[in-house]
Image (cartoon, rainbow, N blue to C red; front, side):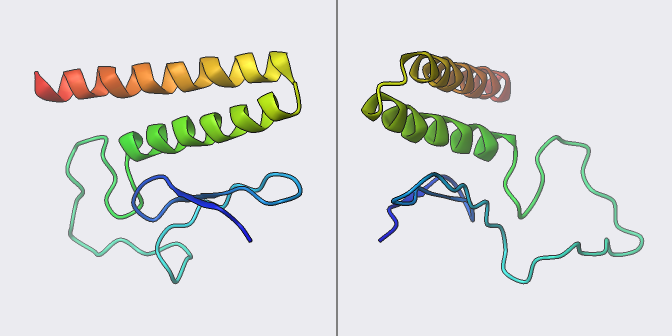
Length: 103
């Protein structure tokens, strides 16, 4: 049995019973898609369909939290501390992006 932690649109984090596995899943039918001719993307940093930077930050924060729990369980203090710092950095970046969007 694999617990699943949803971390955004089309992106999942799986923690296996033995070891860790991160499965980054986007839309079904993978592979690189061709851009339609004559159409240009808007000049923003958001990407359509595969999740943008905000989704990536949420995934990183969730993954860091889950990995920190595992590190705590096995008493890996330094790794737990580094993962906590990763979580804090992801949260701070997400807040900064939210403030910029409101301005």
